[in-house]
Image (cartoon, rainbow, N blue to C red):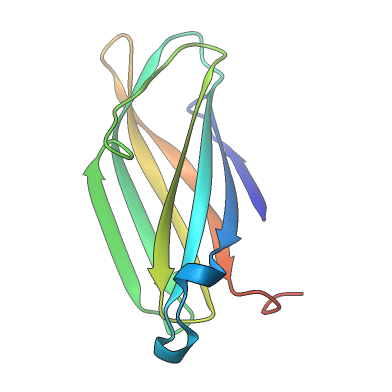
Length: 129
């Protein structure tokens, strides 16, 4: 599943998700997903990704917030017209959930701004049509 968002920030974020059957355990209702994020800098200046903020909600309305420095141990610089891609994952205890959030970015002039991560759905195979 692909989701894209372009915000006023000049940062285009696209997401691809995948259900990880081998890492999931149906007996304990633990469903693993990977997601690949592509961050495209459409601005005229270099930006650095400083922090992440995720809101993960499952179909039972259980909400988990994740905040932290950078992504996958990095705080990448992204030059104008370039992109940065990484993959990570999460486990939810339902068949369907969603994720959304934001990255705190810093422009080359020192200004901090938020780049919104679009809402994307996590669903076990055959749950959505």
